[in-house]
Length: 404
Image (tube, rainbow, N blue to C red; front, side, top):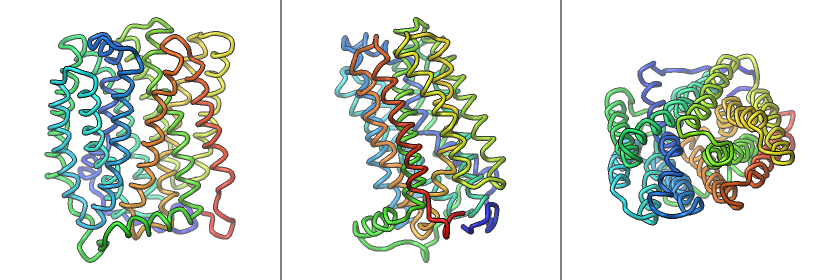
């Protein structure tokens, strides 16, 4: 990328390819969004408490983290299509098995496998985009993928609540298997091999370590990645805690929760579309700053609710403002992070997103520490994530000589 927003634009991306990449990107996050409304029902079905079923969500996120460290470097070495096809195939199998489990340990195991599978599309689809675009076009493309990924919080809870109401929570996993099959078809039809043999990295695990070393010496990477990591920690505290906050504390039904979560998804789509539109006018850091300011306002409302009482007039707007501005943070943050690492974009994105999902995996157990009737841990984790993201954005900014 060049130092001027909007310069060095190179794009060979067809609309059908971008749509297929969006489906592959959404596959992993959709896996969590669809069964969120069913968590209380699953706890009752297995005869366990809140914390036990939260480990299914944690297992999924840890699978997402580990899988990206495999898929990203593999895609730099063998090309993009083979790992993508392997990931979608594994999701079909794992989700199908998830619909048959009879205990929490097997549920967690199935969710870990689903996370491993979903991680491939999340990292490698973005690597395909980095093969095909640079500059403002890349930031815009990442924001468009973010917009499509934002459909997960809109479609997922509604689909999950509908399947839960008609057929029970096991139908949710079968639905994910069918969606993964459709993603595999879209991949075969519309996603070309974007990483030719002459550009592929060769070597062993030392390649990953070398890229990691380059990444953690780059202020671009540190600024973009750490802003994404900690803001995503706040987001996942909301994702993991909201089913119990909305249903157990505020007294909403599963359909009511789906409506609340869908509203957050709509806000995320609006912010992602706006970020894509502004990509050529504002730098990546400026777009991230907009998102952090809005997210801080949301965190403040949730903290006030934890102090004065769990009011829907504070919690619902607060959760909306924590969730929605991620459209300004994730896409621009990733584009900023790989500024110096285009030679190994698959591995660099994998490292960034592996840590992102690893941190996110700690959020659900943390917000459930006080049980399903207290929002104090929920508020504390969200406030911590937003605060650390804002500090990272400010303290790790690239030096003026190299800033965009």
